[in-house]
Image (cartoon, rainbow, N blue to C red):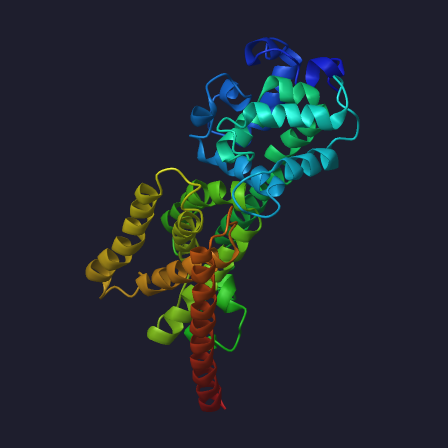
Length: 371
């Protein structure tokens, strides 16, 4: 229980520095803040730094964009007075303290419509909802907005990734890999197409995957939630299918295909949120360079070493990209992005149908030989 009155807790009419002088309030905000954002806490709590400075942080910008999209019902890229009124009335359970609801909405709307075109663009909208006077007028909306910005479900998302890692570590040291590895001679045991992700060939192999899952997977889960687990599984399945079809005599262990799917999932996020993410070209080059160059390097270096399954890494990367485009959050869908989405659906479906058909054929022949 926070021992302060409501006026001292929900959007007081003071600047950030005064708000955070109360230790109880500061500690409360810091707890929810530390779990989410790699920015200074004063930056998180709406300082007088200007909208442009606040939106430099990608994570914060994404959440503002989600709120903007909720308000922009017709998805035309602007918030009309009618949309703002409907949005506020749906979130406000009481009349604002300073007067009737509609006149105050109109006053705030006109105040932040800087170019007087009778509509708010994204930055005008953010400037309005982070303004002290607006938040004083609409305390319920402000309180809900904090919950929207830092939803409770984000905490369980992190645990989901930790559960996967814990199982991988436990099974490695319990040495129960035999029924789990992807054994080419036992492809009819279909669980092996997925369970090999829980087995690893060495401690170095295991902890390399763990480190990459934490470094690459957790940032994705903070924004995209359960979708990242789907991408990881798609990468694992894609890796085993690629390996089995192209190198049908080599067994497979480790969650590396799932890790590679995280790299291309980042690429999918950049592609589908090109206008909303800062420096998209740099991010695309960074993740694209690693995704392309690493399998090529490993093919050249280890092509005669059957212990390195570069082809499964490539399979995981391809599936991560295609599934990522299909299911990761798209903050604002454009016509071009919709076309990309459908292309990814068709390509992934065709790829899976082809690989699974080949696998069924090979498994049938294998079972026939065994009988």
